[in-house]
Image (cartoon, rainbow, N blue to C red; front, side, top):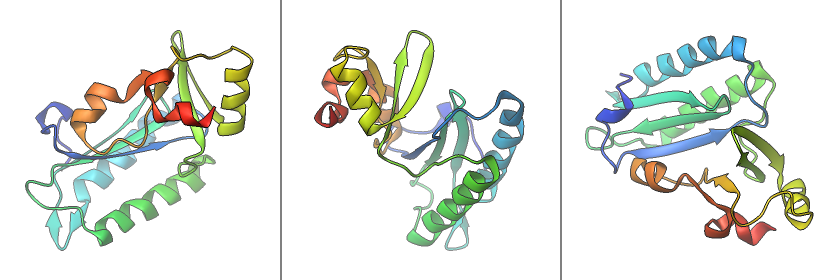
Length: 160
């Protein structure tokens, strides 16, 4: 099932997959439908997972599971990875490169390789006050409290 985001507890498990580029606006409705259909049918050991899926800011695929009902097992996580790899191929993006960083400048969001991120920092184009997205968070509580944080308060700081 694909429940409303608000129904999930802070402890709900979260996975964030960031796209190497924004999904085209005309593709968003179809993409959303595919990931929401996946969430509705996602199972672990023949038990339907209480799952949520959506696309945020045209570039982040957010999957969430309330493990109070059923845990996401290794097999179910493997299923989600296969699904995301298929999306990656279909949309011509990279969803698994953890050395790409996303940051916000005003209302715009940019995703760049780590090397470019470091160059922008060295050139003063971004600084310790720039908002970055922490795709390594693992639960809804952290998603709400610290997904977006300043570079100076993030693990990203070690990479510049």
